[in-house]
Length: 238
Length: 238
Image (cartoon, rainbow over all chains, first blue to last red; front, side, top):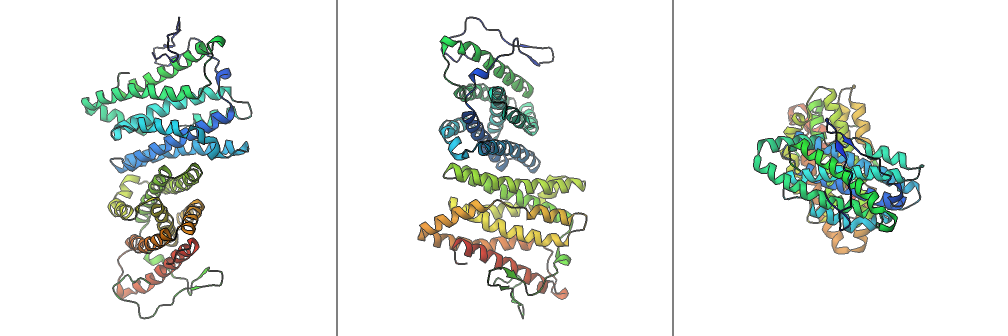
């Protein structure tokens, strides 16, 4: 459990995992009042997807064999296609993509540097876990977008990310190498902190007087629960 | 003029450039009898496009600003989409993409290493000139594919490569920096040799007795003429 405001909330209603491991939120958290403006959202999400594409393209370039390279190229193409979809939305609103993405370059580049990993498997885990968490998060935030754009963005971000190949490669490697498994488990635990900071930066500063903190906290709890399920699915202890 | 068989042909009917610089071949060269089998073609062309994608993705990652990064990401997406289109054709014929591409990995990886360039501008020039020449070549070769696939491949490879941004960046850089211009001119001249060797490897060994040499030579002359026009368009002397 990570707390984002320097102290733990008095009470936390943690989401409960059902027998099938599916998230059952105790209540639907209304995030819409916490969502950033459309321009902020589109610029940040667009640059985020471009970064995911760049990381996956690096994984393609350094893949150990052709079949994996081929599978990863599909995942890279999906991230790129989400990026281009968001760019289309930016242009549709009459804005210049480069201008809209510019405010997010320093922080997101730094995030990618910090989470690029020491080797190919760490890079893969970063793409899968970081990408998964941020996709979840931006999908969640898109609830707060205006109706003339929210549903299109939701559909775009919800499209299959093609990450099955990442899961397969990671699972296989972890099964066959205990030492790698424990190193990746540590890496996964570290990733969640860095990634949540990026997510936090997508939301306006919390104003305790308005109870923003209490509304944001459960969203992060949900994101962490989904992250934990992804770790579990790989055979890693979160 | 490059000769590929150790001696110059007795007579060369060189293509002539019209006033508008458009290639006017003196005769339509029948390449179909020289084309490789479908499997060879698809495997090689698919891995070639994957390599073009990887090079463009590297150019995206190292782009000097966001607007250029954005433009290059489109070009990278186009190469990836051609790659995936060829992969679809391989699967449609019941073959495994990794198996079909495998025979071409060593030579094409070596080609990409040799032509990756010393800096971002050289990389861009390699993507534009090498990619352009090989696209031309595979489009030309696709004439020799069976009718149930040739036209689809022709359309796929003929789609806009999104390289306008490469041309713009190179033109601007060359106009503003004479030293860079002469370095890139040398690089462009070197690229044509390496690239034509890749093209040559896509064709069966020439059998002088059957006049293959005489039929291949004009194809290469056309490719070189188109390369020269691309160099001219950038303000480089070929």
